[in-house]
Image (cartoon, rainbow, N blue to C red; front, side, top):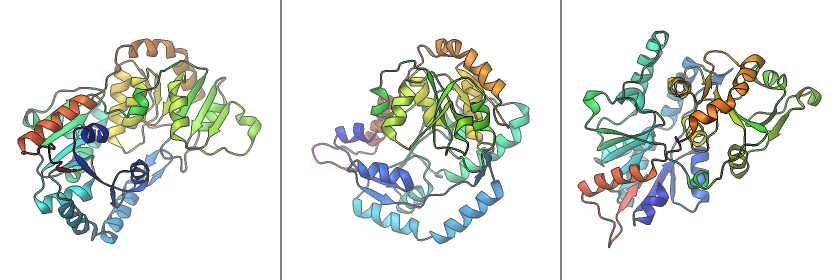
Length: 348
């Protein structure tokens, strides 16, 4: 999205933290550091109260961030904030009266009618309250990027739109193939139990990212552990037979685009991942395991149907970049922001 906006003459300033800031700054773009709030995870489950306590402490320790970011936005002369579910920058923009566009996936929980089992209704209610608390009170437009398209709630039909996934150029440039390995990724390996043992019991080559090799190399002979590498990960993703991973939106979107069936292990307590996994499985593109770790039988049954899932994925390789850009340009036009001949500013 940054490349598309820059190509039209817009100036960008990125407000972000952690790995996101490292990646964006490495590309030569201007960044301003914002605090990062992390969930506390154990055995693929969010520790809710520990997470809330840690985030509260973090917010208290970083209470000067909002006025600092507001001052930086003012100096930059921003015309618009485009927010991907980042709360410090939206609070700063609200202080300045700066227009905001939300571009994220999380708001599908609050602005669309997602269908979930009865057993998940309480979790859905809590998740909606959390998302509502983290989003701006006023917004020019909510652009919801998604691989599934439930109906918008009537009260949000005028302020929200759904677009296909936003995909980076490196993914769109890949030519997918079907190799002999299955790619494995887990976003929170701390305290994870049972996954590696289940993988080791299956006659299949697994290429693994973000998990450490355990002792006892002979027992895990079919597992290959790779060091972090964006290029290596994308190469292994594009050439894999299938994917085993948590149910984060970005990897699901990239896997769909490259035609890769998935066995999804959503993080417990992250309802967005629960919904992602439910809808992915309903589409026939793979399988989801909720509330427990996978067994060798789960893996074998999934792998036995990989060709069927791959066929179901055919024709669903959609990219929403240009559509999202068109919505952004309409907002900028309505606000009177014209990047030519004199570039104006947008903070992202």
